[in-house]
Image (cartoon, rainbow, N blue to C red; front, top):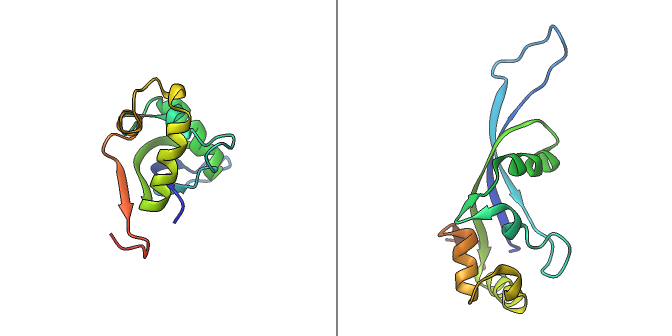
Length: 127
């Protein structure tokens, strides 16, 4: 299973003049598969998260708008969902770029950006 960032996103429907909706805002769960380590954008967690929370709500909403193509009202990080193999691949990629994270260990990096919001599933998809 690839790494997936899981976000709770609240969005609104923009309607034409004279058209209304009820409700006008909705919540959904958005799962984002980041690029492979080394590819542009693979450090999304470094740029968007801090201790398991989005570090800049405005930036997070802008990111979410690019994913869902609707006006986003709020975007909250829920968790990193992965299996042990892909988590190990992430650990290796972080270790190779440790200076980029201003940290002394991979464990420090994971805690600094994800807090305790890492959900590791078994290879079969079971918890």
